[in-house]
Image (tube, rainbow, N blue to C red):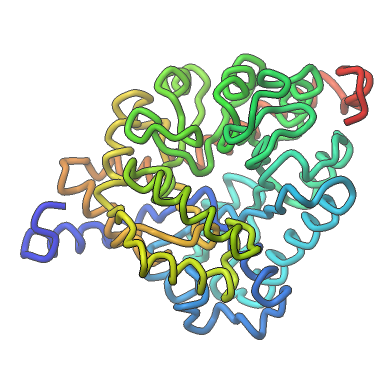
Length: 406
């Protein structure tokens, strides 16, 4: 942002806050439930988000309010080393964690299951709380389990996380089935039927293209940025971004430095190796894990992303996909490091101010922060109503369609 601390910067920041008061952020991805599992095993008294959690979490109520957040897709993520029934059980625990958070904080959070619920929450000054499952391993190759998650309120599923599953390839694994298998295509069709958004963050580009060829409803990328700006496989190639207008989908830019700043990619690889050398999972954000990360950072200063880095991605994504097909998915509490100015969930006004400094209109920013996320869910609901009128649930299995059990 030009002159971020001067009079012009202050003016942009004031305008950003005013805009967010009317058109709050509907963020696509926050990993608070997993952080609460890892840090305190869901002891919500020990990590009460009604209190200041700086230094422990990226998220608490005061900072959500300061950031202008009006809706949050809480990720009900489970790591891929949890498989089978263990993955399903852990996903249910994550869903329960979100329910507990909503119940504990009714003056700030409200459960949302639909686009109408999101708008109702906004009108009441509450934060609409939706859930998204991160990784198809959460359904254990069962379409009935997929439907059960939808009944429990899950409104998107990321088809993979960092590792391949039996029916879909991940962006950060070696090719397996070459995109989506036949069963994977059936998963997408059943997600369309029940009204669960197909989330293509984390998946291989082949999986993105297969899913877009199969889906009858808009897709989302809940936390992915532009590969043309930062060549990381977790980002979205331009040819896929260019398909979004025809599909109606939305790509939500993420803030994770290793996905948005080319100089941070190599540094993060070394930081991940250091975590493994200390016997820790590279995504560990517990106190012990962060102690190792910060010691490595002190010895090896990291390249620092900023709000301008994220804005570079959004500029490009708007150019390729169009302003109706972009959004924001910060990935807070799912990453060890965040950009300067976007350190936690209070930082969204800094990003909006940066975009204002680049000439983004209020109308375009309102689509980015709120309108597109509501519209994509509403469109998926409309597709679901039409499909449910035409066909019943699918009971197809991995063995039937792919000829194998796992």
